[in-house]
Amino acid sequence: MTNNSHIKLEIVRGDIAAQPDMRAVVNAANAQLRIGGGVAGAIHRGAGPGLEEECRPQAPIKPGEAVITGAYNLPNEYVIHCLGPVYGRDKPEDKLLADCYRNALLLADKHKIPSVAFPAISAGAFGYPVKEAAAVAMDTIYETIPELRHVKIIRMVLFGELDLQEFEKLKR
Image 1 (tube, rainbow, N blue to C red):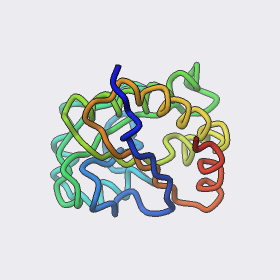
Image 2 (cartoon, rainbow, N blue to C red):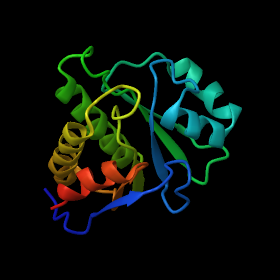
Image 3 (cartoon, one colour):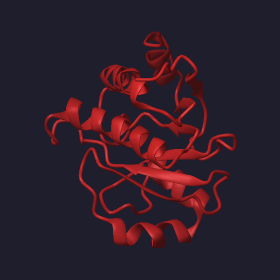
Image 4 (cartoon, helix red, strand yellow):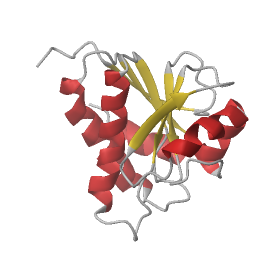
C-alpha cells in the first residue's frame, strides 16, 4: 500500500460536462449508454454523436459496472460510464452504488488517469436520497484511495446547493 495523502478530494458545485481541467469525467449512464436526461444528457450533448457511437458496442451494462470511452467534444480525454442503481428497485442499492465509485476509480487508475470528476450517481432521476447517496459515495472513495497509484485528484461535481452541502459534511 502506498501513501496516498497526495490524493486531493474536491467538492464543488457545477456542471459535470464543463470540467476542462479534469482528464476524465464520470457519466451517470443508463444501461444502453445512450443520451438521456440529467448527467447522461449533458455529457452526450457536450461530447457529440461520436460518444454514442463508441458506446453502442459496450452496452448494455449492469448496475455497478463501469466502462471507458473517449470524450469527443468534451474538454476531457475520457468519459467513464457507470450505471447506478435505481433506488427501490436495484438491490442491494448501497453495494451497487459503491461499486460504481470503486469501479470507476479503479478503471481510471488502470488507464493512468490523474484526475477524475464524478456527479452524484443515482441521486437524480434514479431516486437515491442525496444524504444516503453522499454517504455511500464518500465512504467508497475514502476506502478506495489506498488502492490508487495514478489518480491524484478526485472531484465531486454537484449540481444543486443541497447536494453540495450533503457531500461537504462528509469530507474528512
